[in-house]
Image (cartoon, rainbow over all chains, first blue to last red; front, side, top):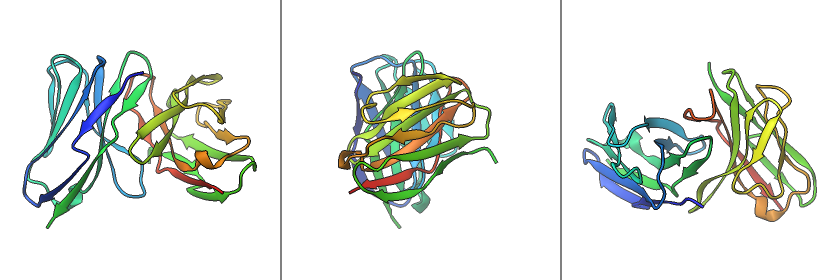
Length: 110
Length: 112
């Protein structure tokens, strides 16, 4: 089945630094989604990407849908302590099936 | 407030004792789904429902059952739970099947 390779697995960065994480796949997806999960809560949608090459921003977050439709990245600018959490990418084909990456754990030093 | 509500949030039980985790959404969403989350594996889909009375298997359906008798509710049933079903479970819903899914806060199950 489809698999997503998400990297890095974890990051420990200084407050104010920019963060970059990405997902790659051997499969083509029609939609890429980025979620954030805080401790004790469910994933919350950050950004949805629907077209190859699409670049979308949500505040300090920017995500892109790769041209090949097999990858996506998420950047966070000027990180702050509340950015701590687990970030998941998810790819969606036609229909319902959503495939998740294993997650990137972000820790921020204040 | 638009939300997906799961109950219970935590449950410790024993092998073989049937249990049900409820999921309810108040957004009139057609699509609902169940996932389990295990360390290092991300979220894996158990079952999904495109609409009332329409359900289908996800990637890891073994040992689980679901039903969708009403649009707002999508319970997850473990008829005979086993320790390998110890996990964090999430219910999600979407307006229709190809729209982004919104997640509940999770149910942590421990099967002893």
